[in-house]
Length: 469
Image 1 (cartoon, rainbow, N blue to C red):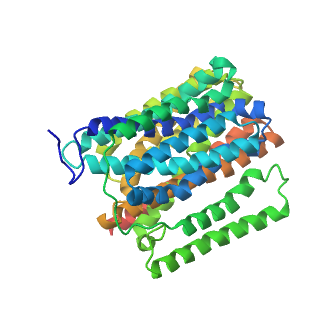
Image 2 (image 1 turned 135 degrees about the vertical axis):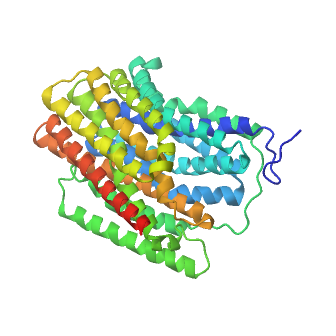
Image 3 (image 1 turned 90 degrees about the vertical axis):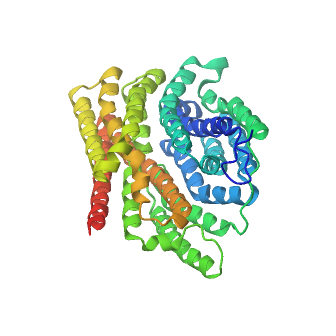
């Protein structure tokens, strides 16, 4: 007998559907971290510059950030099942292209395409869960989703180290991309067979002009940060950055024009008037600015400066990732009792972890992998305390009717922050390393991570004071 939790949608096989969409989210999560472990090996084999290896990560995030809202709307227009399958197949093909890349620029182009296809796939995951689990099973379904999301980090670090070290069939680093091919094909086939058809939402429209303008503006700001060192910080790069900022300002004017014309702008402009939301959004930007950039810098430092092999470098992060999952599991309950104070406490723990890391590197020129793993668990625990309840805290004043738009803007901001952090902190890391040493570069990067987290605390505290009034 079919369960009909959502009107007009067959939910009899919803737990199988959950397994399919969560597998896709797991593949996406693994990919975000597996590349980090392989980056030094990729750079060596492709003779890629420091800017190019940063761009391999950053352009993926920029493409994903600018298209994720459009990806969600395409699901509303054409149906989540159809767009999900298209996204998975696109992600699979672009992963194959990444693995076949023969140069740094080609890999950057492939990663750009991979980020764009991820923006089709990922929004359909939560949309499907929201639709199929509207009853008492909702908490259990989202609990499974959260656990899998957390474990993807540990799996990515571990799998990246294993694949690079084993050098299966002589593929080397290419295997970290090729592994997505059989997984993606299996997920797409299962989705075609099991996922239910969902009614389309009439009236939903795209804002492709807004997405293109936002992409151009972000590229204008982040691109010079990535390639500034390679181009000796030529004066015209600052002009490009200024033009990028002007384009982003023009993006907001374009969005207002779209709204006045009765269209659906990429961002809900009414959200910009919500002071609580905007303060929280800036806090989230500062927090994620020190997120993926931390893992990139730490990976480069371990493999290049400390000569820790890829497998051991991946294993260093596994305890951190597992501690992150543990902290995430109980941070929600603590947040319900202590509110945003839990976020401030988590940031403080992260800063303590960074201080312990700097002390370890200063005290021991070549700290062993096991010692780094132990120290990094402090950082991971603090990050887990913050990341799980942060989105809920930021979105707490957003009206239910604007929840989707608020979530989309939050997700876009998070990925832009990740990309900006990789570009800016990565550039400073490489500059200090070239001028002094890798150890000094790690100290400088750690200081920037701490400052970014402190800025996040300042905006979280401002948000809390606003709540108290």
